[in-house]
Length: 252
Image (cartoon, rainbow, N blue to C red):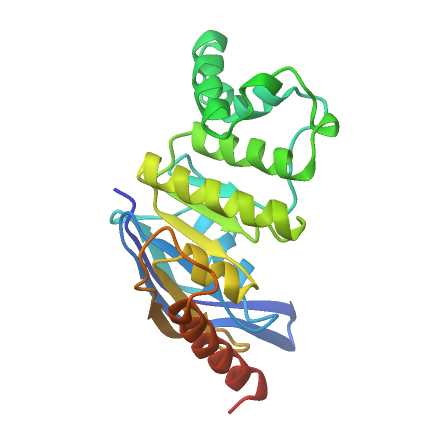
């Protein structure tokens, strides 16, 4: 489970005289178990697309389906991790992770049991009684990932989740995310500005055009794991994608 079918356009109307087309004729399939990264020029609509998949906004035309069921709004089939940690500062780590479970009506004991499983998965089982302000940026993002996973989503949506972290922490969390993806058999749709990050993480990289955003090409990343960021093969794929992005930036 976790196959996503996208076929849509999205416009924003500022007033009756001006309409901005953000996404135009976007077609994309994310298969069950895929790790797919989306990359493109700044302002091309990457985050808008992710919000549409999350059900936080509606397409102007077309639709999105997860396992054949049309997405009509937010639901537990989709887990979302934002660039900002979006944790509740007044709740402890375990109560942040269990929040969605509580909203589903699960008993506190069951919610805590599930939350502890995912805290252990992200290596934070010793911090369940801590508050977000007592954690580092990387730790807070691990809590956010655990919270998304605790709801047992079919697909995990990630909007530049490591973008605000230092390079060392970012690289470490990329490795941890791949380990979680493998253990949990997840489908992941991951937005990033970093070509290096996309090549290291993804099975497939969807390259978007400049606005109005379209999927120009889906690049298969056929590299064995664990990957060497500096290998000739990784450099070749990275250079290829950088050339495509530069071409889009110039409008060629």
